[in-house]
Length: 424
Ligand SMILES: NC(=O)c1ccc[n+]([C@@H]2O[C@H](COP(=O)([O-])OP(=O)(O)OC[C@H]3O[C@@H](n4cnc5c(N)ncnc54)[C@H](OP(=O)(O)O)[C@@H]3O)[C@@H](O)[C@H]2O)c1
Image (cartoon, rainbow, N blue to C red; front, side, top):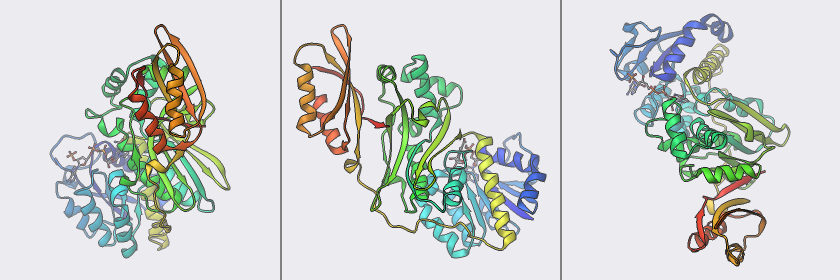
């Protein structure tokens, strides 16, 4: 049998405990051995819980669970970097396999933990750390092992996608959509991590590392959120046939890679344009397979537990085959991650300008002065003012930012959206 030490019995941990109980016979058959929940560590052991775990299996001493000689695999579902990192490191040092859903841990300390796993020949699986129930890590590591992935565009944060959907489809303002998301449990009381893009950036660091076989850490990922977007910009870009989404975008350029999270305009035919509400999706382009799309629930107890349980089955299968560490670290390249300013992308800006002669010329000059060439300009009059959407040809991000700076300084420019990259 495979004896499991579970750290954390919150949203995901509870769903894992339930899954182990309710799907025991299928899991045992797929794993080739019984998966047994031996011990559980939590912060507050006496808290009442609706989970099928006997009280005498629960402790507040995570070290005792990690070091229990009967525990074969540690499932880390505490979150954050410390003390989770110390527990995971110790488990691996002792030769125990580890399954984790912890994006912060893997995005910041993945290398060190992968090395510890390799040194002891243990498995370290983290399918649930990116896009919850969507099986993207194993798809990349195993199903696409014969291919070469060049680009990933993903919606990795359900909270921001929910907010943007409500702003787009129902005319809500950003604060209205956010408070609704909080009321429905899609957003935390402190939504900073989600709305500023930090959550998606941690997931993208992991995804890009696995997709391009080179280490990308959280601090490599440039990140802009959605908090500055207004209803007007969302509505106007929709009128022009775009979907405004917070995307995580990574490319393998051969000698270097890029990874960034930002609000982007997707053309209406892009597969991610129709991903609504709290759903997540990962679009990939590979040399052989071409375009691929994975879609599903990127968070929530049950979807995330689905990924954790799959990892446990993988650990058990490896154990049966005597082949620990079979799908170990795949970051065998050492490619630099490009600075944000060096990225070359087409972008849009939505401006509100004073509607009088000469204004267009002034605005266009700001682009010309920075050597940014314009692809199209669409104007909609709104009385004394006009909304203008300016779309550029691909240009270095540094130049686009300089244009933005010039526009902000112009008295005729009454409002200016953040930089909206265009993903065709
Ligand atoms: N929730 C999701 O939808 C989701 C989706 C994907 C990935 N994840 C990841 O899954 C992990 C768990 O998330 P969650 O939402 O389940 O968190 P959660 O509901 O806050 O649960 C955290 C659990 O960890 C326990 N804990 C905290 N500190 C501990 C310590 N020092 N020792 C032992 N136990 C400790 C808590 O104990 P008490 O119950 O006693 O307080 C609680 O049971 C995180 O890494 C998260 O990023 C979550």
